Length: 512
Image (cartoon, rainbow, N blue to C red):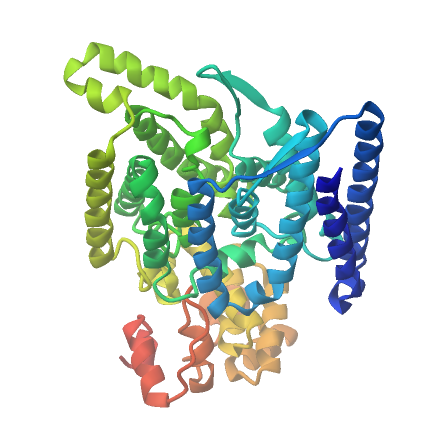
């Protein structure tokens, strides 16, 4: 029974988190740790008593598998790079540790309960890292974070099928938990109980994030051939984005052809070798369907008014179910197109894997130099969306409003005034506009005060529409707020440098 010391020690370690002031100050987190520690001890005690009564031994083995340590290094590197530039990641690090401890205990107790043997290794690390790259529950709802960990291993343990004569888990473990949580949050309209939006926005802040993700994924692509999935998925999403831009004049994903969180999913979420097709033909189809699924999910989420950061999470479980069927489809096509049988029906050897990565590296380089991905996409900046709105694009007007509201929340009186004028122009919303003009005036922005006074005095000219309201140029002191893009705050404070940066990003009203 000595292996059961592991969950006992983990229960004590989780209980030690109760000493942290942050955990004690959040009742949801506090009782989550209490329940986790108590549940582990109760489960361990029952397992000890039942096995001892029957005289059965429990075995513990240490097994380090290549995919696990490779994924651990890749995802760990991304978390470190992200956390270096985003403080909230550093603050969340203890919660990742707590989830890792819980994962070891839950995985081990499931294994000992059902088979009497637990092969401990690094497998829990990439799974928990993957969950925490996309979704955090905080505050009173933290128990859902631990619930996702339990769901990961319950799904892996009980949702299985026979494949190639072996029992295999059907779903990518982390993707299953993330997708179930995403659907629940979308249906209940409860995204605000998570930091999902903040995670997605902050992942673009570190410099060269696309390149870091690309480099982190290279070893797994060389060893397991998963670039055969990533490349067609990337090209599918990029191709749709270019077609959409050509048809509408704006960007489908707003601030990038492929957002960083989606690019992350393309490399380290849906490419799990254990739950994806085995043949290269199946993997190509897998990638094409995932890329299409991300675009379709984003469009659906926009249509129902839900945040679109869920887009890369929703398609994965569906694809996991399709994986064996895609292999069969590849075999069917290979039988009828003999010239392609080697590519479609078989997993690629070392040479093909290297060649595929070389093609993907060339494609990535070309996309970077062409501006398809990178740190300076025009969609990051407000002037692009204002111009598209003035040209009559309703979606651009809506996004302009979102950007102005964010700038206003950050302290820009100019943005509050512009948002008020936009509310009148789009919806004739004079009540909402008055609130924005008041916020603008509180920030000592003259046109905002004049517009507020005009509305309060019943100036009939203002009823004519947005053109009757006063507007002005952005104040110099507000430029650090306004010229920022998705890369985060602008640190520059020199007036000439700020003006040059603003001109570079399209602020023509500054006399550029």
